[in-house]
Picture (cartoon, rainbow, N blue to C red):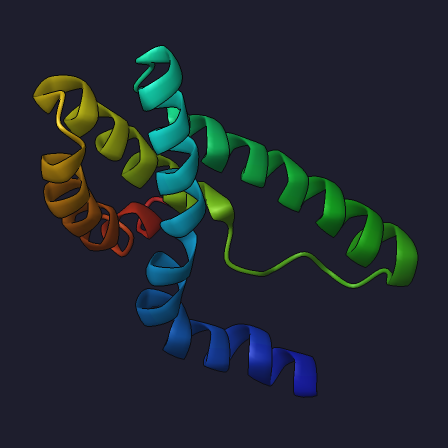
Length: 118
């Protein structure tokens, strides 16, 4: 039906291009706040982990319990390796500028290969 078209074909057409650009804004904001206030380089991982938990709660209650639709969308777990690398670059360089340049590039480039194991 129409859901299969959007979830399988359209999702696979747009997720490598749009998803990393959209999903780097929130981890970068949380990482910047935790780094400037507490010097903790784990903001991106914390943000993506909370997103993963929230997405699974929403999918379980909305799709599975509410209308019995199977859960087969792109998982936010593909963002976890990218967030770990972003935090590691901040921890190693201690520079927000270098992290924004190198970490942003690594965040987007690791998005596609991190989906291979899933």
